[in-house]
Length: 275
Image (cartoon, rainbow, N blue to C red; front, side, top):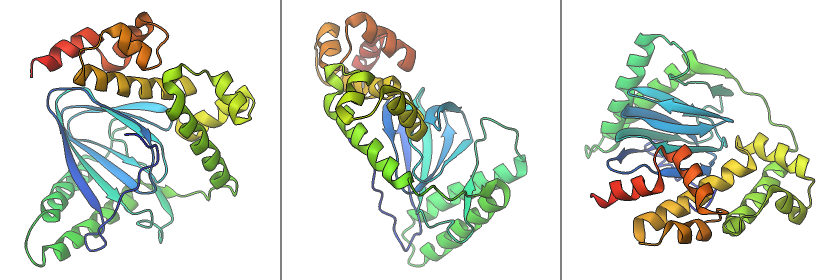
């Protein structure tokens, strides 16, 4: 994904947008991004790692995670999986003025409530793609029912954003655009701060606050995305790939790749060449 901000169209008739993602053979990293829509991730089976709000969550079979509006997040498929993703318009809970706090991997929740949610999610998915003339009406009723369960059991009062939040987000977007243009040049936090006109300490603090990642972590995700693409589509050596993707040397490339992907670049390349 080349842009951090992602625009997602919502079908007004269907109230939401959704899709099922299925990873079969390779581990994929979706770089840190955000959008104004809210997102519900349901790991039907397999596993999915999600970076969000400065932490890492690993979703396993039947786990659910809700991502609120404009929260930066990134995902990686750790195994073969099947994941349902629902996008809600930012106005979905406008009347209730709440945020949804749902992460089934972190806490013990009422199993009956979770069972109801899982059933609803699959019904909504099936109705979303149904060709029946009036099935969208039934789908809308299920979506409103889902809204009820989320608001009743997993909501908290939303705090109003400070007046400067829009300005700060614009600053961060400018910085992110700069990083995406120059990450292969092995740019540093100090250099980025100087060029963008901030102190190193201020940029580091603001970057982590608004993305949930450090400068280095975000840059590494971009480098890895490019490296994976080169491993998948070329026969370039690790030296060439590390040079072209902004790693200082092959040793650093191997180390970061292993930490994030769980295998070395060679092991990854070998596993994908089998298919």
